[in-house]
Image 1 (cartoon, rainbow, N blue to C red):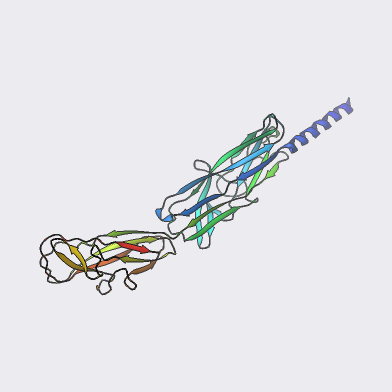
Image 2: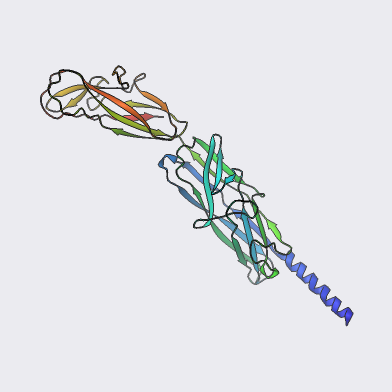
Length: 313
């Protein structure tokens, strides 16, 4: 009887070890490319990819996967993973659902890996796809122009898996005879040169006889991506006139000029030497437009003109 009992125990141990080795899974995650991102808008951008898992093993069993995804080559801080560029970083995050960060058991940052079950069919195979939301955060207007990327290698993606009947309750427990899988993918984005421009009118107000200079100011605000050189030109108005002899029209015509300086000595036009130049920093850069109506005869009435501001970058 004693020899029989030992033989049964040996057979049971052999079957258990064979079952633990039988499961096999492969993993893939699709690359994420945000393409050209307009950070000046200030809004966040979200794209989707997925973790695809294919497993084989004992029929009608379930393989449980603890899918840890780490920082990637761009690194991470609390609350954000990062894309790395030549002149800085862009913050983004991976989510398993809603606002739940897809984390890792192998880092000290908030966010744990999800627990994923893959049921095997009668033929001993099964697969599933788990969506991953990738969100590039907003409010990064001062990020520099250029390419940004984070590469995820096998050391970042560590997927521990095993049969649930071996006692794998969750991702905090290491399964008996665990299997380890991995995959690679990347997340990338590009910030192109972009500029936005707005303008505030020049209003000379209500005047009587134009016997002396009448001065007023307006504003052109330009916002360009960080590191983008630009120049702003003002055209000749509806009459296509020279910068200091533009025409406001009403019952007749009133001559006026727009200048780049408060002394009204530097005309603001579209030709070389008459434009305003600058370098974008991602924030709004206000530029004062200095208007002047010189002394002249004019009939009573309302006079207007329309000037187009063009940003070249």
